[in-house]
Length: 153
Image (cartoon, rainbow, N blue to C red; front, top):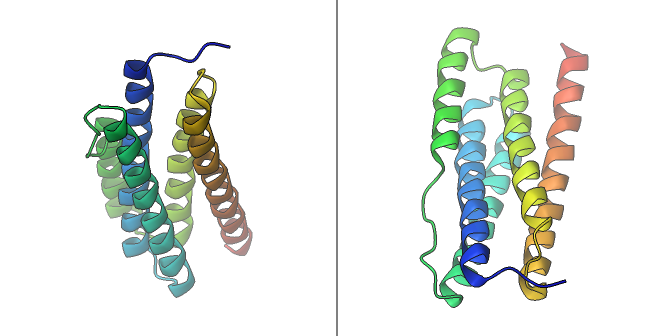
């Protein structure tokens, strides 16, 4: 299988950088919005992990001679504004915060899955796959916490 050209690789990685930046910002907001100490810790940790994932991908883009993305996506910004609006209306209960975190992770899952369907160079594929595995872990953990929160309420 032939790999895609470096421009396409850079474009794909820049999309994932935006996605990771969205996750970093989204988890940071969730950490601020939750009242539970265990969720604050979890979301803060996830925010840091997303930031590190973005930095790792930025380094690869730079190595390939591209200009690394360094901001969140327009969609991510709009999603956060919607979350802020919604939380003003509903009050920031932990179930609502977990629902929004899971929605964000659904987007990340989709973006990483799409990237992995492309014929990326093997060294880059391994990085994207490792990060995708982390996204799946985050998603499953958030979903489990949300389901437990739903059951409790």
